[in-house]
Length: 201
Image (spheres, rainbow, N blue to C red):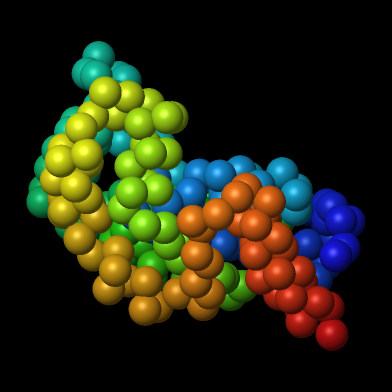
């Protein structure tokens, strides 16, 4: 396996900017996959939730999953389903990163935003509910450190999660992430090194 880390300049020479969208349900390993890709291939991670985080912090509101969901729903209701995707696209276009990783694709408008870039890739990360619950509690983000399994399953059925299974059909690659970090990293390398080799030809 090749361990050569590509610089953003090398990626741009290969095929201009590459935008990689990561899909998956709560605790599937999206953030770890995004972190690894950015570190290994010299990229930058963007999250749709960053747009919501900025607003919640400015309003002095708790960064809870409930508030993220409520704010996202309110913005989409008032300004259209693509409002957050459009905001994030502006951030991506302003970036000089050759490899862009978009963590947390959940809506069709977000898929369309990823696909609007000439070089794009969608990866779906899958893991069982039991594994995802364990990871969510361990990381303790957005008030999940003390969440019960029943509450986790309820959140799993929230609007932001409902469409992921359907959108997963649009992914270029599916990675099962019920195993170790090493297995996840190897699977990601298998996908991305193949893309780079193909673009180089």
